[in-house]
Image 1 (cartoon, rainbow, N blue to C red):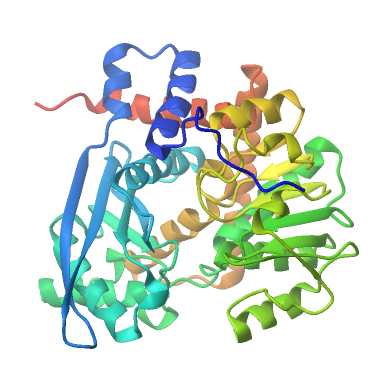
Image 2 (cartoon, helix red, strand yellow):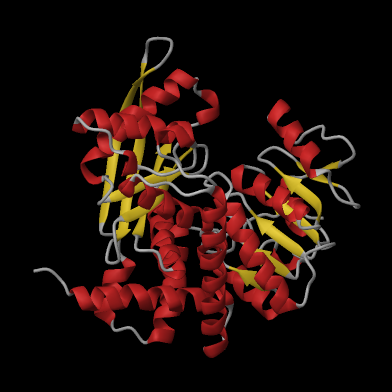
Length: 423
């Protein structure tokens, strides 16, 4: 197995990649230059400085972003991530992908995203709370239940959302449950939200297996990334009878020819904060998880995991993207030429934003659904979206990513045309 090295000739800027993906669909749809300009650009970009009093008494200033890409079909929707590598271009790309993701599954949102440049692992819980509350205060003018609804993303969780909800509620003098989603159940969170991204992926993966004639039971699966989405999809596919032969977190990969004990891996990760030292497994480099012999590969980490530098070593028949933007356009073309069936991120990981939508609706009406209702409705939505994307891909004789973009861009362009340009 190789350790991938990114090719210097390949475009790895996520926003440039997002624009390339849009342009390909726009060409199929023969969009005019004016519409392309509108849909290519972000509606609003906010950059904020976040002064935080650290536990030692000194002040450290962090930089944060909130981008709203498009709101033609409804308020902006998208997560907030805390990571050292957050950049404005990354957040712009993620916001654009949210626009297309919401349109792909047909929920009435536009796309937004936020991020703070920080290393959350080096911050105490009190420092994280102060950072979160000040960031929420700084972006307060542009967020709200009818404007822009944040949610958890990389290294943020339901506690982060609780702090944001409370901060905005204090600023506005009233409790605003619907200002964020992914909250604790006790604060208007939704049943099923924690595993919604993975469960939505499972539903599309079952459909992909049906199309490709692969039985998920007994299939060899590799999971690249073991955060919330990766850990949950590993558990869900194992429950469906698949063999999870490889997985990795941010530190190490693990491999077992006959399949990992997923429940043991989950317990080990919870207890030690890493997969390192997992019994009955062989440690391998994280990047090598992308290259193991498997039927199904589930990229669940960050952008640009599969590039021109390592795509030739990918051996899966089906790839379902739980991460946002894990495959570069060049690698996309190679995978398509090799006959790999790829379920793109704007479809495969849309379960999270779909259940976020359900949570938002429940908060607005103060009427809450059971977990069975959530999962059944999610399955209907995801299976319907998969069929629509597959039909678009077949109709235009193209790959699933382009099919998804054709569907999504057409829906957003139509909303933009009907609304017109103000003034």
